[in-house]
Length: 163
Length: 455
Ligand SMILES: Cc1cc2nc3c(=O)[nH]c(=O)nc-3n(C[C@H](O)[C@H](O)[C@H](O)COP(=O)(O)O)c2cc1C
Ligand code: SF4
Ligand code: FES
Image (cartoon, each protein chain N blue to C red):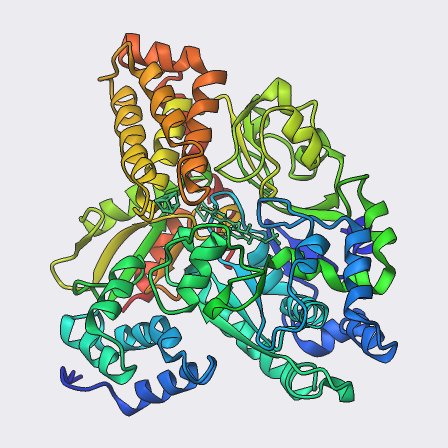
């Protein structure tokens, strides 16, 4: 897929418009978090150019948008693999195998946290509580899909599904 | 769950256990028609038909002694009564930014009962005179954000939200706002900043949101479970709700039980239920091992050793008397395989990571706490480290803009108080009192037993 650095797609802009409409007419900047999510979906990660596009579209200073992008953990300010796996290792999960699930993934993928496999397919991240501690081990696939009860055979299945 | 269905049918009615998972009787049970079939939106209809005044609604909620389920336990009716009358622009905000380690009740409410939250918010909007509301949803549960948007569409199409609701003249618009990974946005003013499109850095209080809230306008902000409890109160009455629990602690409450139990999950029980009863509902201790400690209210609450928690009942007063906090009702259970130094190291990392950095005592202090605990855990602890931890903690407490500072300090103070000998052993012998293999056996892939389960 060809990614145009200089514009956001029509589809993305339409989604942003829908978000802008949720807020009072003079509070367009409230849609910035959603806009950055859509921009990240489209481009894969948030390059400075992409952040500028969002800023321009919402009439915000670039710096203000950059601050938001860097404050929230799930925005990717660096390129990531095709599948970003985020494993919760916080204490409640750790008591039920969260850390072991992360170790298992590290072994399988041959990478550590914050690294990407050489083929660009997987990035591994350590996450904080996802509000699903009863279902540990818990992980997120590309920010948006939660997978629960991730025993080794479930992790194997997940990796196979990631084509 | 039969008992629970009978006592508070709008909160966890129909949630069933299928193997190790909670689910609904049918997969579409969260939808409008199923919610209506369970008695949903009856309270709203009743209020509108009877032309119940905002003051009467607030009086009913006060009578119920519903206390905020987000952590602070502030009486909900009282909070609503602080909203100024007559200002033209007011807001209702729901806090579904559930990220306090150990807490996972709001996720199940959003998963199984999004309409209970919507109905509660509409009733609240009527009570405080707000025409617009937002539900701020934790970044990590995007699929439930999408579900909530679908539920909103259903409610809009049925005339429960929008202009002139059910012909009553009441108007209320409600939207979902997606978070994107920042624990501090669970703090109410950080959350408001976040909706305003900024970094989620908490504001000084006062002024409180009831006076200066979202976009500078009067705002009522409550937790998801708080709103989800409202329909029941308005349908069966504040007294009925209060009587489910005990004086000063109205109603039932969802407790999220995690850690070393056989069946982690959410359990709705009356306030005042003895702790051993909850432990039993969660299937008892995993592998029949011995209970060591419990964090009763989410990771920010002080830890309690087994003998103390076993004598507690689950309500604000009993837990406070025992020296901890009821918090969000997240019960983290730890057995004898846990090394308390390692457990605290992980928690202290969390607070360090999630400090928003505005206040020096919190920004620097959380870093110090983690550094010192880490060095104890890794065999480089010094004899003076326990005093140092105490010092740093006390220098954070009460000196910060928001309660995250205290939340970082309280675990440190309580772990080192109740399990002092373990910390001392670590410092002296450069290793754990609990052997590594035993620690590992306690936590390794518990869920191997339940392979095949999905969300
Ligand atoms: C660091 C921090 C994190 C918090 N996280 C949450 C949260 O995830 N959900 C929540 O409802 N309240 C959370 N709170 C409490 C809120 O600030 C606020 O008290 C609550 O949403 C009010 O609703 P309630 O009165 O219905 O409990 C947090 C507070 C602090 C200081
Ligand atoms: S106490 Fe910590 S998290 Fe709260 S405002 Fe201050 S620096 Fe931010
Ligand atoms: S600690 Fe992992 S989801 Fe809560």
